[in-house]
Image (tube, rainbow, N blue to C red):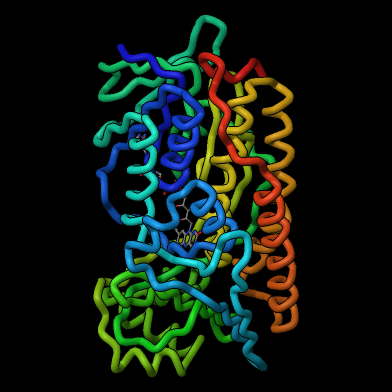
Length: 388
Ligand SMILES: Cc1cc2nc3c(=O)[nH]c(=O)nc-3n(C[C@H](O)[C@H](O)[C@H](O)COP(=O)(O)OP(=O)(O)OC[C@H]3O[C@@H](n4cnc5c(N)ncnc54)[C@H](O)[C@@H]3O)c2cc1C
């Protein structure tokens, strides 16, 4: 039997960031993942300013830049009638945005967590929770229930289909209505300048410069269309939908080199769930999933990792309550915009209006993060989430 202040289930952006911050606050942290170190996952991995700001604040941005991820210095929103390009102004220590491949982003965060004192174990599948005689969560069972890991706090950072969220019956507080499907792959030799998002009534797509001088190019369609039209050859469907959404970009692909197979996501309706309770917490997609068309999941996971750790460090019911209120306040409008964008049934004017709201909300999120004092305090003793 092992005992920790916190066991975190899921060692990707949400879990590794939470482990890093809790370990720096002085907690004994175990981070486990059923998968492997240094692996990729389904994502087009574009970071927004809030996400890059967090990496900068935690001192890990130089390690991201050192992966040779292409610095992104502008964002272009392309519509039927116009292209709007916005420069990324150097501000708050963020000189450029990045879209590092997930194997690199997640590895940098895990390495930083280990350097901060967290223990990390891969190949560990959590199968259930342990509760004390009052029903409070006090650990996890792994490997067919043979191994018990006890902890004051169990944090589920186990993604969209979170086992921890299911076991604690986390309540859905906001539910989405729509979902979009995504197909994407990577191209070398494509002329890109910054993030490029195209939203027209003929289709939606994006081009995201990343590592290895490659660009991730995705196209979004309705899940029904994905099901009806996807053939044995996903590349054919991908190119057809890209041709409809952005003929000029599709034409460029003829002379570019595709470096990986086409990957697909069938879509999932978004949710915001309660993220704390007696002895447990949720972070990242486990607690808050929104359609990836607004490319904001990682940024919000990095935001909430810090807000959650601050609340745990304070260790009071008020701090946890305030955390839930702040998280919901910063998330709700962004969630609603993402949901409506995912419907893929807006007009040109409406989608431009949604993007203006998105931009306002992202600025608000950044201001909220900038206002936080550096997180330097040490846990007085064992950090326990108080009774809800
Ligand atoms: C197609 C697509 C494109 C996207 N594009 C973007 C984008 O451009 N920008 C952006 O910001 N976001 C994007 N997102 C969203 C982003 O990828 C997620 O928000 C992010 O991955 C959430 O991170 P996480 O750490 O919460 O969960 P995950 O990355 O899902 O990690 C969860 C981890 O938990 C582990 N785990 C699960 N169950 C167990 C268990 N029982 N025991 C042990 N370990 C377990 C898994 O192995 C996994 O490693 C996209 C998502 C999709 C699907």
